[in-house]
Length: 105
Image (tube, rainbow, N blue to C red):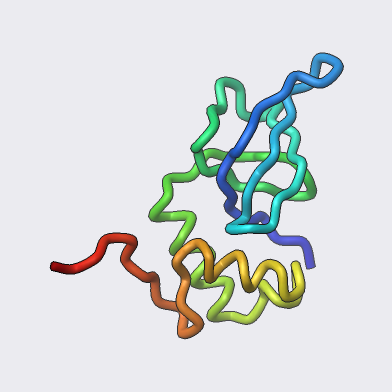
């Protein structure tokens, strides 16, 4: 199965006329082509499919998508243990919920 998975852009590089990036999937980093997302910026979330960013995505939607993938058990199948770890690092709890990044007073 090949999923389109959300990740956060960490760096940008023009490599031989092609816009490339390192995308962080919560700790799992992969090189990704950004040619389909002109004007992409560091810090933005993108949906990545077979090494190409194909769409921008807001942080909340990215986390919801990761939570649903984790709940369905497809992250382990798609990326092995590294991606399940990445989902948890992005705030996705093992039960499929989303942790709040803010601490309560």
